[in-house]
Image (cartoon, rainbow, N blue to C red):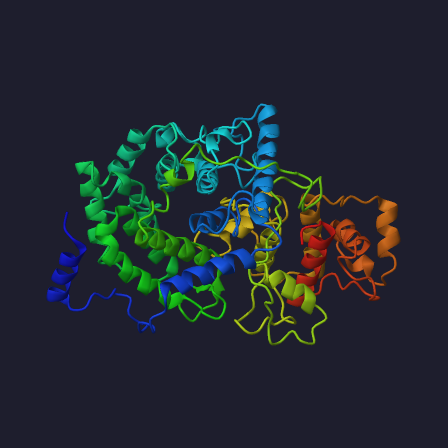
Length: 547
């Protein structure tokens, strides 16, 4: 095997100092990587309050990073809260399965809970459990590996499970302990789907996907010539690429550390490259540029990449080789109290999940005098709303229908549903998934059968209707009788100017205090402001016990 030092020497002789193509940022002053690792782990632990949840930021990847850094065990209260949430979600899967639904071939994408419906969901949970020394093949009597441990030809899979990431993480998850499964078939599939350039993709070029797809092959690099050839092709391609963000850089580090100490020098280079996005003030990592805000997902990936590097430097097993956690048979699952830490109403849709705080004390310069300040800060700290800029929220400006669809789906932590519901919401727009998700869960409807009018300014009555539908998903009874509707709305001098399709929703919002009844007029067709929308969503989440 060619040594990394030889590679670097050859590269320097022909091209000069080894620097990625992406060079619009000067290399930063050297930051101690161990300090960055510990600070980012602190950020992950402290930013997610009150508890981590399955299938969200601060969930499985946070558990993995902290456990592989030897910061937590299964008995840690923070981890126990995640395990409890996992048990609740799996109980919901059990309930739906008992109704005769097959998770391998569900009648629709939304049949099973959003955090546990794809193979990758079960693979991600396997990684987190294995990092704690817990056996995913026997979690309270359930074999969580059974859903993905048998190789199924891509064309025979449900649409949820057709991407290359499914095969990548199937092999990674199976090899954590190891578990029983079709390793050879997954390896062969990865080799067969590799492009001649050495890459893999999710339909288009994707740097992260290529680096991740090579990671499970690293275990077989020194023993299988075909795998070695494939990985060498990957490395040759990756070394020539731009690494424009912390996530892609993190995946390169995980790959190199999995390949072993022969790649330590190259891994060190990418660790130093990763540190350009580190924010020493918060302990998080910024993205996509070093001048942008700290991003929780980027921080999780950077943290576990630094943990992978730390483990290599200290002669420990690699990030995804968790055999060290099963020396002597693994750990015992602690007793879980399902009534502790329960968030949300009993009648909520199983896909409605609390959104954890990921950026405490988030605020904006222009909301100091806003009556909606508390609501804006609460939602911004959870990533539900963003400002018009890093410093300004613009609470008195209006909001489009697409923006509102994005906020309301984020507020309920609904899983993305990619569906082409409207002709004026093309798949290449930033709001495609949000509108598709909101339509799937019947929170929004179109202005016609084929149009959504995404850039239309949302009115007060439209906002009330959407919030009322979201409340129903969250488990709040949003049905009112005609007498109750009239009794509530007749307090307002202009209620007859509201569209009748909005009457029940408006009455519901006033009854629940989501809209304030201290004004004499509803102004149903007037645009609603960003600050007022934040207030409505905040009050909805408060009523739904999701804060």
